[in-house]
Image (cartoon, rainbow, N blue to C red; front, side, top):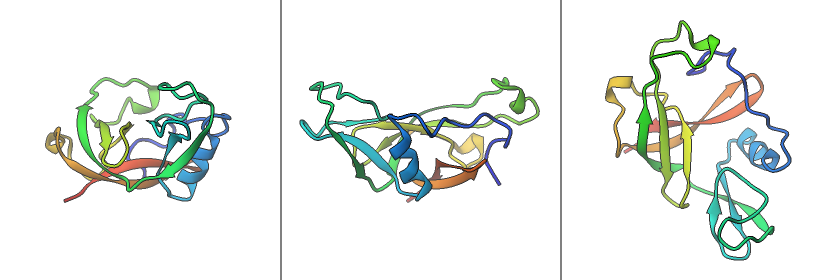
Length: 139
């Protein structure tokens, strides 16, 4: 069962800059775009490196381990599908092996137990034909 309601809009997995990233997610492989010229990581994927302005990049597999560096607990529905959904969490995770942050939900943790500094591991959630990275507590 999905953490959030099934009738929320899904991301566009066909955008040219992100479709390879979504293809890796469909295989349940967490990758981060990395510049071939200066090795800078970037997320979300984009056509040009923010450090050296190179257009040459690759997708690098990462462990999926990280730490919650920020979170919010929305109580007001930001979409009609959330009108009857109780408060939920949205976490910002700093990846352990790439200098990038990813946003998702900490799906195995009651909202009152979400905190900055929690160690997390990526997990995968299927929703509407899209595989979404989410987070579980680890360690």
